[in-house]
Length: 284
Image (tube, rainbow, N blue to C red; front, side, top):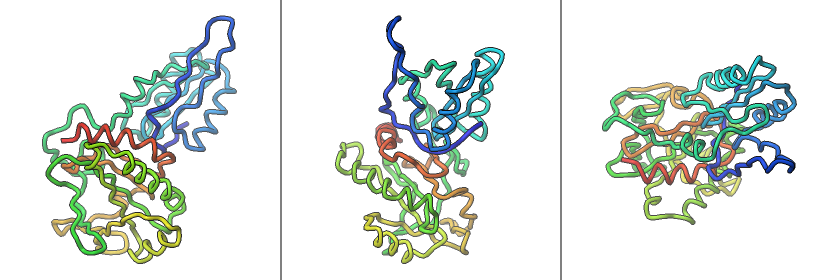
C-alpha cells in the first residue's frame, strides 16, 4: 500500500519509550500524513506482527503486516512505499516501536541535494534537472525568468480555480507566504513565490482570488493552446509535463535546478518554511 502527498514538518514531536514499569506512549502518527495515510496508519496499528510502516519526503508511505519476521515486514513496507517515489523511503515503525529518529528524518527532508552539477544540462522536472524555461510574465507584461544570476529560491506553484484541491490549498499557501515575510531573515529575502494559474484566463483567476479575499500575486504562462505552454526558445510542451496533477509545486534554485517537487496539494505549507530557509542558505 502506498500514498503520496504532503510535505512534513521538520519540527515534529518524537516520542520515546518510558522506563520499565511505566506506561509506554503509543507511537505518534508519522509526520504530515494526508487523510488516506492517517487512515492507513490507524489500520496498521490494529494489524498483527510482524508489521512495519515506512515513509518518505513528499508524502509517500507504505506498510505490511503478518509477515514471517520483522526484516521481511520492513523490506516489503519499504518496497510498497518506494513505488513511483524518487526519494528513499525510511522505516518509521516496526511492531509498534518507532525506529526513525528526528535527526535522520530532518536529513531526509533536506531538499538541496548533497551534490549537484555546476550547470545541469538535462532539462526535466525531476530533482537535479534544469526546469523547462517557460515563458512567464507578470500581469503587466514583465518577464519572469525562472533562472536568474545570484542566489535565490523559487516556489513555483501550478493551480487553477477550477481545481477543488487547488482552491482548498491556496489559503494555506497565502498564509505561509505571509509567515515567511513576517519572519524574514537576511538570507530569506531571495525566496520568491511564482503562482501560475493554468487552463483559465488571468482575469478568471484574479476574480476568484478577489472573491475569496486572497492576496496573491499571479504569474502568467504564455500558452500555445488550451493545454500547451510556450518556452522561451519558441518551442512548446504539454502543461501536463510540468503539472501531471493539479496542484503541483516545485522548489527551484537560482539556476532553475529542481530541488523538490510535490504532486498534489501540500496539506501543511508552514512545514515548508524551514525547508525553504535551508535551501536558500545553501543555494548556488
